[in-house]
Image (cartoon, rainbow, N blue to C red; front, side, top):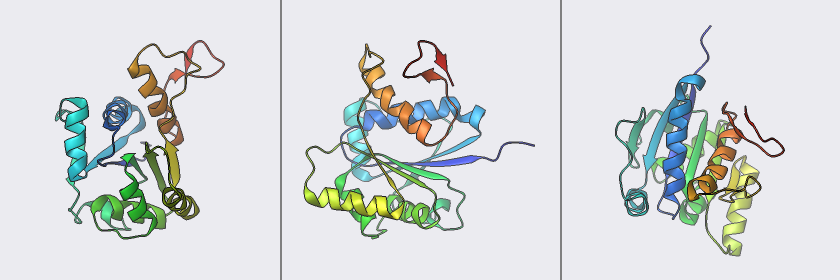
Length: 195
């Protein structure tokens, strides 16, 4: 019997840190066949601009993904009957976090977050804002109480990263673990790579 597809939606907002999104999507695509992944992408309008500015290129058109406009409420995962298993917003702006916390559903990213929360699926918000004000913290509390996960972009240094890519991947690999997707990586307490 074939493994049930695991449907991941990736939202990319205008917060700085789109390099995380680029690496995350590329890693997901490498794991796609082994884990039977469906990968859909939503860019906010500012997210597209920041992605291009920070990465010096657009997302690779040859990747096995689908891209949806943020105003496309006909996307399959805009409905509770959706097959989406998880939404990761990477990076997640404080504006998007606030709109999700208060249920505005004014665009596809926010509506998809609303759907995965009400359907008890996984919602991960990779945040980069610093420092945080009380409004940010209260909005994060609402997200957590609703069943979402706040995922600060906090790199691990115990594996002694040697490049910026190593630092980025330390965050990406933790997200992939949290989504319960099989991967082979270096881990704490082990010198070898294992899954």
